Amino acid sequence: MASHNNKIKIHAHCMVAPSSAAQVSFPLTFFDLYWLRIHPVERIFFYSLHTPQTDPSYFFDKIVSKLKTSLSHTLQHFPLLAGKIVWPSDSEYPIIQYTPGDAVSLILAHSDADFEDMLSDSPHETTMSRSLVPHLESSDSHASAVSLQITFFPNKGFSIGISTHHAVLDGKSSTLFIKAWASLCKTNDESPSLVPELEPFFDRKVIKDPTNIGMNYSQNLLKISSKFFPHENINDRCLKMLPFQPRFGDTVRATFVLTRGDLEKIKKRVLSKWDVFNGTECSKPTNLSSFVLSYAHALVCLAKAIHGVEREKQKFACTLVVDYRARLEPPIPENYCGNCIWINTVDTEPLNFIKEEGLVIVAKCIHDKIKMLEKGVFKGSDLISWYEALAKEGVVAMGVAGSNRFGVYGMDFGWGKPSKVEIASVDRALTIGLAESRDGKGGIEVGLVLDNPVMNLFAALFHEGLHDHS
Image (tube, rainbow, N blue to C red; front, side):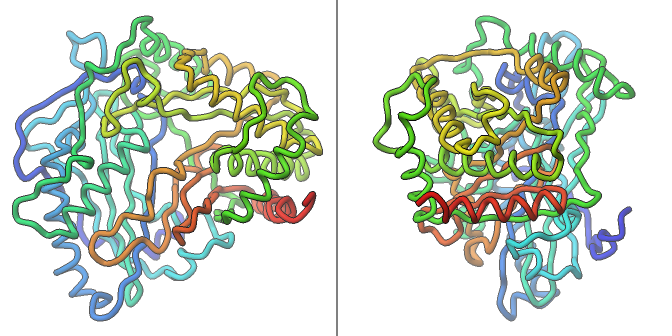
């Protein structure tokens, strides 16, 4: 184990089961199958405490006890999350199945790391966050849906680290689960009922796959995986996650905040030059979403920072994760619990990201793609081949995780809202993590993990881009 883990001491390893639930199973849909062997999504919620709550015996006896009891009550509504992905021999697709006796792994730990450092937005060692995230079990024959870790920082606070299998939950579903858990923990009710908007909807019959996109994707992914992971089991029915290792070495993690005022500046700049660049299919909008503005700004700064440090890297591409709940015909419930997202490619030339007006071009292309998808266009484009083609041409692929619409800073378990929320898994790829800003004033937080020299240049470009071109 790396030395940073010496600061973590495991207090206990518990298994938390639903307070009562019958056996239940659902097949994975084509939205789920794409993620079958991709790395888990890992988030950390940090909470500050005040005396006497910061006393170790008070924390483990009172706070942890409450968190465990409410978790058991929450799993009664989300029993599948205590279950496993399995692939029955008589089934064409894998299924997610809960059998009484199944439970969620919960690590209770104690850390001597500096809590204020963990809450800081400024660059810090990537490995610091890793020790707060639990391992998610997967093997050839089965994979867990969720694992949790509660870490106590003496005299300061605690963190909840959650690792979720992406073939079971998308971002909206995993935050629904955390919201439900926080709600039941805060109300501390003996009869644990959820308000209707927090009740999960699991029925997979609402998702149709007329063209077998999901299974085709799984097969293609296996073909490509055999090239990238030659030593892994690439058996068609293997459920072990592929080893997308976190990037350590000289990497640092940092968070950048765009205020509403910053987003307004970016919007003015993009709209003022909208008509200068061709290639758009949409008329000039009167407004642009915070997502388009923040993602475009972060992408362009990231591409220019990488190019600035590694001159040979000048071609870039990016993807867009789109929620299809309201876009399917007919639309499906907002509280659908599973995956209802698809990755779409953003159509723009690989050199556009590092051009002087890259921000305008990239923002237009992201906006156009979203507008096109609003018309109900579903493209099961072959992303696997797209990634393979990029790799051959030396194009650097960038992506996004999280959303400024999830409301992660509203997760109050009864001891106040989070002091910070981090998407730990952005260290497993070149991914930009997004969340609403913690001050609740309509800004956006951008989190990422980069090599130290790239992070320094990214920070300079990120801030410079908000002051220039006014």
